[in-house]
Image: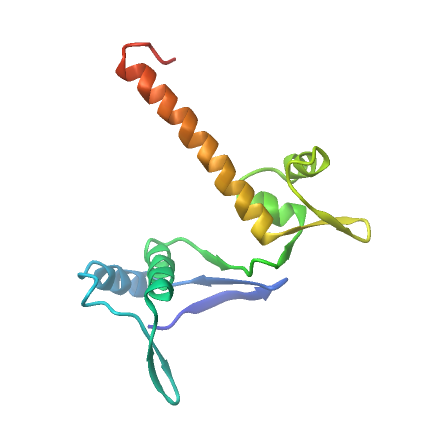
Length: 150
């Protein structure tokens, strides 16, 4: 199955998307039991079966592609602009700058421009998601015991 690269390596970020036909084929393959869909990589010197952790990562990547989502592949130490970090977090660039200025999100300067490491942005995203999940659990608990949620 071929990946169609729409915008290869823009500022070190690769974006991959699949055609609708390939998405359907991939979704059907991912619906098979895990023991039938082992992930391997073909190279000129032969086929390499991926270790379990790499296989799970590739399957998650393929599931996202099959659903029609664009997938961005970033290294942990890749530097992002505030606009890129905002896009990754679903926040405005201005809000990301405020988070940096408030010391919530680590960043450094490259000249006069702020830069953030991908790993720091993703750690903040996980932390933020945990807070959202905790608030949702509290709201769900309140509703379960009869406290109205507005």
